[in-house]
Image 1 (cartoon, rainbow, N blue to C red):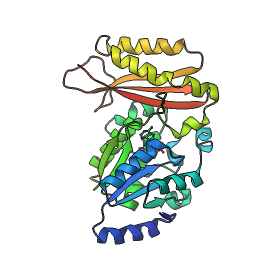
Image 2 (spheres, rainbow, N blue to C red; image 1 turned 30 degrees about the vertical axis):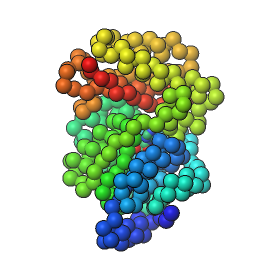
Image 3 (tube, rainbow, N blue to C red; image 1 turned 180 degrees about the vertical axis):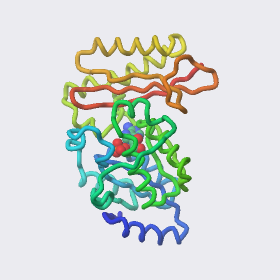
Length: 283
Ligand code: AMP
């Protein structure tokens, strides 16, 4: 695997491959890699000639300094994992390489997608995401970029970014990878205390129960039901639960036949904020 820290060097290396008509699949990450990340990289390898991964903990998408400072960094084991799936290229830039002296976000208009859920609770988060993803796309110029549905709102926002700026890249959303007990894999899971780790599968269990009840209960009643389940839980604190239209991400008031809905959740397990979501069938 080739490892680059410099924008100009990776650009030069990839442009030679593009001249050779090699297709490029790209997986942006913040490192502390797990099977969820690896599934995206394996997909990129399968579908494209060259798989490029970036590891960059992007400061502008964190609204909480402690969360940024404590974000897990496991560079050596990340490199070993990337090599185990035959990743071709790793881009591992410094903050200065990406932002120079100006560590700020561009401001984006994602047609309102950015004001829902994560955008409501994490100030400026999607301006940070838009800034880094657009920058990385300009450096790597991939044919296709792969994103997990674990961050479904982010996936929709990146599709909007590509549409609005006419970026020449295809965006593919991929399934959520889970631990055996159902907890969605996340780099932040390693920061959970044993007590909170044992409690955390309750999140997906509740999502699955909500999915079963969807249709029989109105979105509002279902939301109240979920809120009640978490009020009773001694270790997990619900930040939000919302049933939203997958396309607009607006909270659903009633259910329409021709729309697809998804339930979204954010929960605090101690200091650690976990998110998850589940697709809801409307029939
Ligand atoms: P992150 O390193 O958290 O920024 O995630 C990098 C990419 O991996 C994003 O597209 C995430 O949606 C995706 N990802 C993270 N966790 C999972 C998971 N459990 N299953 C599938 N994709 C994931």
